[in-house]
Length: 115
Image (tube, rainbow, N blue to C red; front, side, top):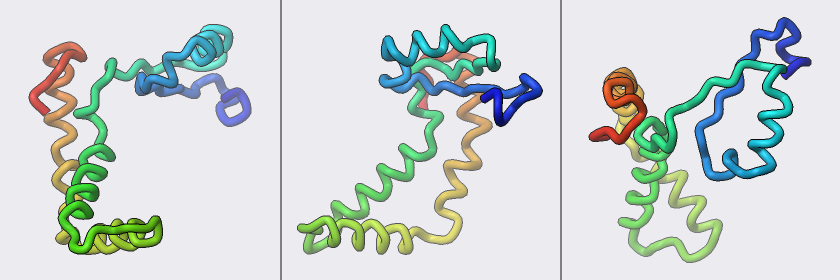
């Protein structure tokens, strides 16, 4: 952080994944807390992760394939084909929903939301 943001204005964003809460990670953050600002992400907020939405859509599309993929190469091909079959603008839906998601999260102060 001190190399990339030598001005001291760098921010570290932690999304509270289980690994980031480990003793080693927590200790490191405490030891280096003066090197950067730490932006705290709401605790365990899966509704904020667009990647989860996309992953679930891809997995669902692959599960519907017949025949199902049987090898790693078959799985890769099925994932790529499923990705290409998403209609234009499909990924715009979760992107455009982010302001509403953040507003909901702020209203409940980081607690569970309807998303």
